[in-house]
Length: 272
Image 1: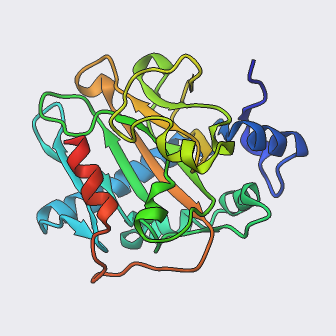
Image 2 (image 1 turned 30 degrees about the vertical axis):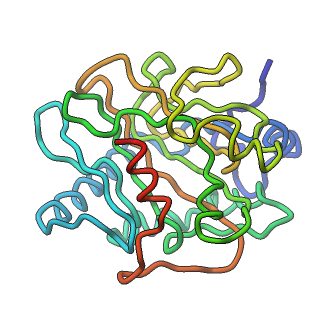
């Protein structure tokens, strides 16, 4: 039985406890309740909608070499379902990434030196999952985040996947699923335990989460995880999450002339 995976924000000030670090080391994930309050969540949602409106009006489809994902909500309105480098277009979200509590999460990558990376990989990603007949993004198959390094010709570097959840999402409504402990497996199993992005089947060992808006989930980038599709259609299926990647390795910022990495083209083909 997994215990002690759920923390309150006052437990995450400057240093995580030894017990919390041990839990993460063994299982590869932590769930922090009420990391921000609901008023802050609404402020972030308004800011994301502001950026979305600008990008749709200007027909932006790629940011720093990373393609955006588009779909339609329950009203038929076009929406962006996957944003990239969002904080570069929002002083408010850029300031949030400087929150000392987020900075303190880098210790989960010890002994490696971690950093929050708004200008690397895909920066601050926002995912908007909604299940409608015209939505292109309502679930995500089993995968790890490690193959991205291999596609870029580098060895796998430790990283964290940190998600700030902006909607209530109990397990019964789908959402994040993880396979505890799989971050400690061999490189071969990290790459091939399941068919990356293609396999959507539930696993008897998987763990889900009862999420409330404002919660934070953290998992090791080598942990196998997926996003379960909501059983509902329309507004009841909506899940919006901001992902703050915390990475290690050489500093490799992206810019407006960056080429689209192969793994994005590959992932797009197998998810379509």
